[in-house]
Image (cartoon, rainbow, N blue to C red):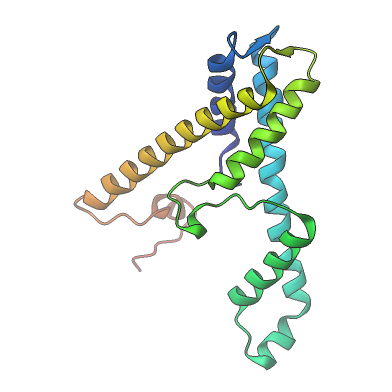
Length: 183
């Protein structure tokens, strides 16, 4: 998944704390955060499932693609784009569109609609203000959290680059499984 479930849970706990009690009344903050996280995880998992479906489609046509000299990545993008339009999905990754965050602005907006709809259905939550105002608060806080996450991620990458010995991303984990990229 593009965003770790643990980070999604953290983000949801923070958002619920920020919108309660001014924007919403929550009988159980933890329960509301879990509901919100479930909605976001399911939505992000849908794109992972779509990617897997595209891979399966391409496996069926692998020999035809080789005969035609078609690029796997280009065909992957075309098929995914077609399925996204057919299913009216909003893609998560902002990096493809030049956005530095893992989630695009469009995806955050889409998630905010789904989250507020779930909160409105919840027995533990009562929306105190206009639902659109609550949704805008969710957008604001999600954006802030993912901008902070991007800064931390970028800082970690910079730190790894400045180490004296060269460290390849994931190299230590690969070595644990007996794979040494330097050999």
